[in-house]
Length: 374
Image (cartoon, rainbow, N blue to C red; front, top):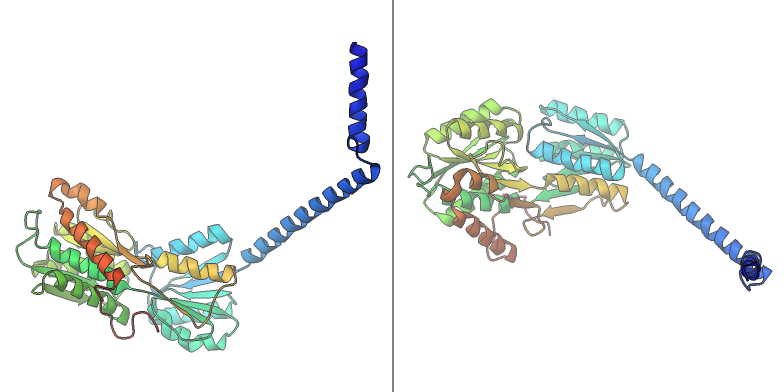
C-alpha cells in the first residue's frame, strides 16, 4: 500500500512540474513568459522610482534669512519646515544668515549666482531685493514669505497675522483684568514690542489693538519697536519700561530680539505673549500663550511645490485662521503654573472669537497692502 501511495504522489509531482498539472506545454511556457514580463515591469518601475528620487535629491534650495537661526521664533520655524523637506524629499539645503541689509542683499545675489533651483526669502525684508534681482535670473524659482512680490518666477506666501493677533490682544485684555492672579495690577494697560518697524508688524499691531479693544474699548496699549531682529537686550529694556508704565502683559513680535522680551517677563515677575513658534515653555509660568504663525508650513509647502512640479510663479497664498496659518497655543503651560487661579474663561472666549472670525461675523482690519489678494 505504501508503495502504491509513493508512486501516486510521484505522478502528481511530475504532472505539476512538467505540465502545470494538466496544462499543455504551450500554456506553461506562456505562463512563464507572462511572469517574466511582469517581473521586468516591476523592476523597470522600481528603477524609474529610483531615478525620480535621485533627480529630486538634486534639487538645491537656499534660504536667505534676515537675522540668525536660534531665535526660537520666526527663523527657527522656517528652518523646521526646511529640515522636514530635507527628510521627506532629500533636497540639498543651504541657509544664509545676516543681520544687516547689506548682508541680506549680498546673500541673495550669491545664491542667485550659485544656481540654486529655489531661493526663499524668509521674510518681507528680502522682498525689495527679490524684486530687483529675480528678473535677472528667469530660470531660478524664488519664494518670499510674509509679503507679496508680483513677478513671474516668484511665489509669495503671507499670513493673516492680524487675525491671530486679534485673539492675542483679546486674551491680553481679559488677562489684565484678572487681579486675583499674582502681579496683575488694577490698571487696564497692556504692551506690545516689535522688532523692526516694517509693514508686516503693523499688520500684527492692528489686529492686537482691535482684539484688545473688542474686549475693553478703554484699554491702554503701549507700543515700541526695537529696530532690530537680533537685539535681546533692547527687547528686554523696552519691555521692562512698559511694565514700569503699568502693563502687566506684553506681546513679543520681535524674532531674536524677543528672547529679551520673554526674559523681562520673568525678571519683573510679569507676563508676556510669545510669537511665531510655541514659546509658552520658554519662561514657564510667565507666558500666557503664543500667537503661532506657521512659517514652517509655508517653507515646506513651497519646497514641495518645486519637488512635485506644482510651483506657480506669480501666485500668492494667504494662510488665515481658517487654514490653520495662525492660531493661539493651548495655554497648557500657564494652566500648570496658575493651577486653580487659571482663568478658563479666556480660553473659552478666544475659541468663540476664532469661530466668529472664521465665519466672517468678525472682520479683522488689515494694515494697508495686507490681506487676501483678489
